[in-house]
Amino acid sequence: MKTIKTILLLSVLFTVTLFVACEDEKGDTTRPEIQIISPEEDAELIIGGVIGFKATFTDNEGLASYRIDIHYPSDGHTHSVRSDEPDQKDDRETFSFEGNWDLPNEPRATVEYAIEIPEDVKPGEYHLVVYCYDVSSNQAVVARDIILAEAE
Image (cartoon, rainbow, N blue to C red):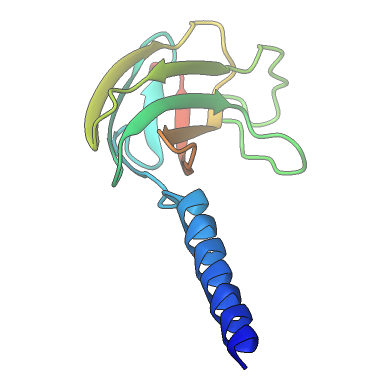
């Protein structure tokens, strides 16, 4: 009987130890949060000007980095192209931008960045996608549509 109690006690201790060890391995699973302050959704920005990007990132543990990706929609979804002539073919290149930056290992950071829009890009609706990573490699993503328009 004493042997059975010993085996049962060891089994319980092993199970508890295993459970605690697995719990520790999970660590931080909370994604960071992104608040894009500017540009606003569907903001009309002038070709040849700048995109004034401003965002606040927060996390329960600490931030690591962020990335901005601006691209013309493709891969099966399209947006309208704005032009003075409705049926005019526009051979200009589409605008794209990608940048990566480190963030301080703190729970909150606000960043500002000016992104230049070349003068020879195609007007239309673009996607602005912001990614944020925390110190535990959790990721958050926020997307916003912006419109690049020619100066009137």
